[in-house]
Image (spheres, rainbow, N blue to C red):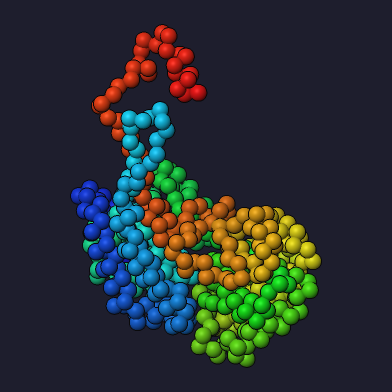
Length: 460
């Protein structure tokens, strides 16, 4: 549903600019109060958030708490550190600037736009908002219309607890996004796919607006022989099939050492049965595909390779069973784009160099996973590959560590956030240099005659 706010987007932005000019958001005490308000609002509406995500994605309540409502932990982390982050930081100066002092002042950018995705439609719009508030900005949120129930609850929560001149929500589809992108913002934060990310960046360029693009890609998962097999299969199963595979940092495909491939497949089958039973369609713990369009795209991938686990699907429920496929070709459609669903291709290798070469032949992924206790192998993979982030001997958990910047590289994104990185993303670091009056050496002033040897010595 497009709210009445869509018709007066320009007015909302102008009201936020006027509010920002008052300087109220620059007060760190005010920011902390707003973060506490946001936390309390989430706690107050927990049940409504759970119900919205159940309606949109058939998301189990435990998954909702782990991956959506747990965003309140980040609020606590930011509140704890915000006073320190917001203080000016002393910068060193070289000896030839001995009479000067230098500091770096973090200051808010102004009015920012945050565009959220549908896969984690609550957490992935609230998390960047935490950074925007912490840094002292006003914000307009555009939730995904595909997750319509969650969009509605986000709009209700924000409207109830915040002045729209400070934080506002604009709901709607493509028309709403186009209307917003035609306006000038001080920063645009977008989470979603690469194709739309290019549209966002092109629109932002018209206003020279900086962007943070949290995209995705085909995140590889390397499985070596030197592992705890039981732990490995459980961690891969969870990371891949949580939210029915609709996770931007889910393992997209496995690169498995040939020696352990059969044991790994057997382990995955056992783990899937433990997680979701003999018929995952009946499991209360297994989510559904967000829309018919996405369901049909994923079903087409089932034609590639050989389905060795799962493969069942039910259009009326937008259900696709947790699926593992073998004997895929790198040219198959399933290996050409991010899967973003519960389908896991397996590719075997005999030497780690093959796996590294395959990864490096593709766009840089948002995440890379490696299961191995071999320290030398870990070091080699870290040195010879590039990705937004790496998680060793686990999957997806890196997203929950507030002290780690989260973001992509190359095609998988621009910029990062979480914790201090969120504060930095929504701040401008203003450099301030100050001189004293106690001394004024004249070597830099005209007339210059005879001063070149001194200048060369000073600057050489």
